Length: 451
Image 1: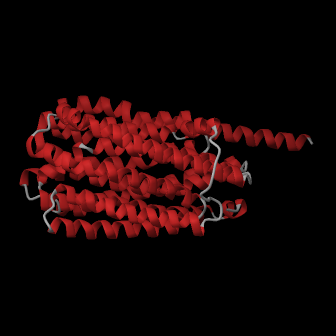
Image 2 (image 1 turned 180 degrees about the horizontal axis):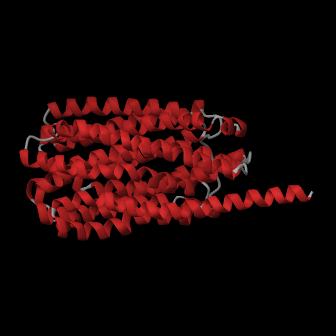
């Protein structure tokens, strides 16, 4: 990467790094939506509900993976900007080994807690059977998927986002093909999980190939475990960990409240609307992970004002994406619900939910990009506060109050209310950051004048 080129072509560089990442993330979300389509049409709405009940497990894995990969990339990216390539590669290896080790341990622990999760959520009968059938296989799938994601962060960080985009495209195609084949043979809920496993393993092999043959900076090899790097990695990735753990806890709370108050129909409709949220979050995450190495690099090179300008330009882009998403749903909201279920009750719930929920798309992108920005410049506290506010504290308050006051409408109001309040927190931190940057510029100007 070249500092002068980034400075002169901010918009172009943001898109150059973000678009492949966005496509990769959209392809990832397409896997989830495709799984939902096959689950709803070949297994039934109980299958959709069962998958949603286990989403906290998925978020738990994502929390661990993002904490180590994003935290490690922040350190590695700044070292790359400083020209410390050997240290940069050591961080890469330590990050990868730590991530894989923790994910394997996590699968062993989670496997012991299935019955407890079902008991707390009051999930019984067919829903409980589908849950167990699906997530037993997913305990094998998730470590492979998250390892792929971690490798992708470093592939993008090295400046090859297109390669990771292509491997994600392969993953989607394989996943959909195997979904169709396995479902046609009537293997049930487990078929969809097995399809994900086969596709994820093949994709992992492609990502591993990159580091053996194509990588210029990051290479597989021996490393010395550095306790300080480990601590800094955890601290730098803490906001992403908090964000995903918050999603884990909040999703569990959502399911707890909806299952008790509105039953399987409520959980199914929430699952379908949730696919929209997940898809848009993948777009924003694509922008965030795309600009992450850019901001880390320029900040490590000492150009703090440029790092701030990249954040501002990206916020404008994600707001535009939010507006486009809202307009799309205004025209296609009704046909969307018909893709997954035949139940008129569930369809009506989805259509109402979509109209209310989509308001959050105007604000959540800005909040997420601000969190990514503060993580990439090493300000873990600010990023953690934003992530915990929008993903846990404010969200839980809304989950346990709004449905009591407004019924199922209150469920749909949770996200818009949470994101609007979080926006004010982001505004405060951005204002403080802008002032600190300006103060450094003024100080430098005075120092030069004195000389």
